[in-house]
Image (cartoon, rainbow, N blue to C red; front, side, top):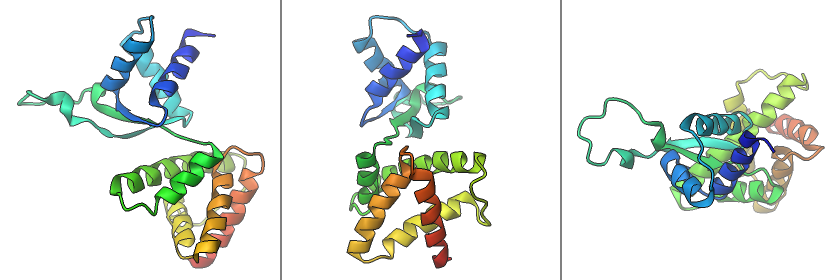
Length: 187
């Protein structure tokens, strides 16, 4: 296995079910790996994972500047990363988390689902499966609004359908297109 692929697998393992700054990722990497990776190699691996839609940037950790009075530049060590779950169950849980009372859980689920949706949408667009009149952000928000306007039993069934549509299952493109058409009735 090439060095880059192995590093990407290690980074995904480190980020599994967690949100960490690059500094925290480096600390974890030192603990679990006997190899030394250059900063350039780590940045390349993180960027490839971002492009592949396997991780996402979710914030910035300002604590790396503790004790510094005048900040003159942003450090990449403060960038916060999280893994993007694309298993059917994980996606369904993220949809259910949108009803949480904890704002951070709602926010993380919203942005993770949005990232998954954007990746799915680029695949649909690249295959010329559908053209839409609205911007993609509006469509995503309308999909979520459509779910939230339904009765609990219908909502539960829709969440299961959306989880399939957002996953990498074979029929997911077709289901996502159907759900987009269905949600268009609301706007």
